[in-house]
Every structure is written in C-alpha cells, then in structure tokens.
Length: 222
Image (cartoon, rainbow, N blue to C red; front, side, top):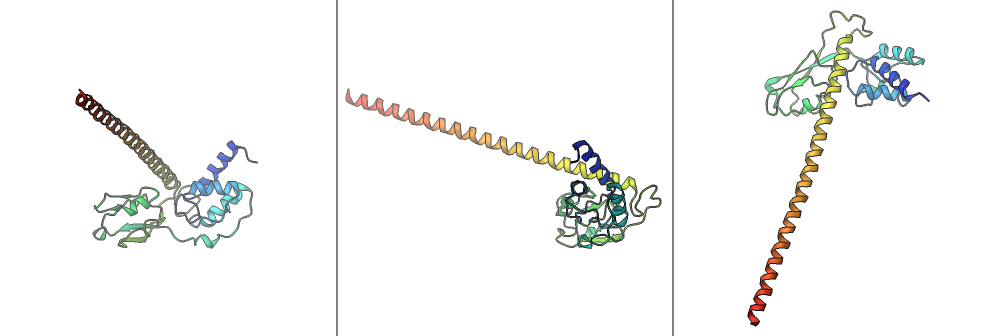
C-alpha cells in the first residue's frame, strides 16, 4: 500500500505529465482526478488524447509500466485547437462561461462573450451547451518556443497556468456554494423564527380573546 505522503507526491508527478486541457476525455472531470485514478490503479496511463504518446511514455517511465498505444475509446490525438466566439451571433446566455474549466471565456448575462485565446486549452467543452452554435474551432498557433516542455503543442508555462486557473475556478465555485448553503440555512432559520413569532402572536391573541370572553361571562352574571 502506498503511504499517503508518497501517494500525494506521485499524484503530483503524474499530474505534471498531463497537458492540463481539463477536457474530460479521459473519463474524469479534471486532469488531477485522472492522475489520482492512475496512481490508485483505477485508470490506465493511455487515456489522455491531448497528451498522446508523449504523456503515455512519460507516465510509463514514471510508474515503471510498459507503454501502450493511446486507447482511442477516449478519443484521438489531434493537433491543438482554440475556440473563438462569433460575437454578433452570441446571445449572452453564459452557458459557455459556465462550461469552461479554465475561465477562458469572459462576458455577462445577455452581453457579448469573448474567448481569451491565450488561456484556451482547446477542450471544446463550451461547444455542446451553446444554443446558437456560435463557437468556432480553430487551429492553435504552435508555440514559438516550447522550451523544455515534453509536448510540442504546449509550453510548461501554459500547462502550469491552466492548472492554476482550474484550481482557482474550483475554489471560487466551492466558496459560492458554501455561501449559498449558509444563505439557505439562515433563510430557514429566519423562517422558523418567523413562524415561532407568529405562533406566539396567535397564542397571545387566543389568550386575549379567552380572557375577554371570561370577563364578559362574569360581567353578565353580576
């Protein structure tokens, strides 16, 4: 059994071999989840189409496994892409903003949206929810200098930035959900308090009516 500290370090090392597109093609909601599954033995090392053979060979060497061809059940390795919104056709529904795992789309409700192409990972998760089909997929310009990145399509700076943006988004959504839960709890507490006050007022009113009735009965007998 892998010790917790060792497991965390291994997950981090596996995650570093993933291009951080957050595309979900591997069957997991984000790259880090896939890394955990690989380390725990719940997923194979050949389920990342964007990473392709580079990622498979890297994970095989890291984990002491035999490299295997990309499992095409999870998709084909293809050139990197970015998306662009045809802004005149955009209706400002915000569905693409909600779908983007790295916050690469900006805009407001009923306002034109736009893609920050330098932050777009090409995951294409924004395409299905768009109700007016106003998002185009375009070839991404190859990096001028990939530096020491193992992938020709991604620089390490890009993958690190995508990882940070993903974490920041998840933290923001978690904070928003916590705030909503607190608001609901406070709302229920206020509702219960209001019901309690109403019940007290009703009881007090009933007591006053009964007191007047008894008083009237005593007066009538005198």
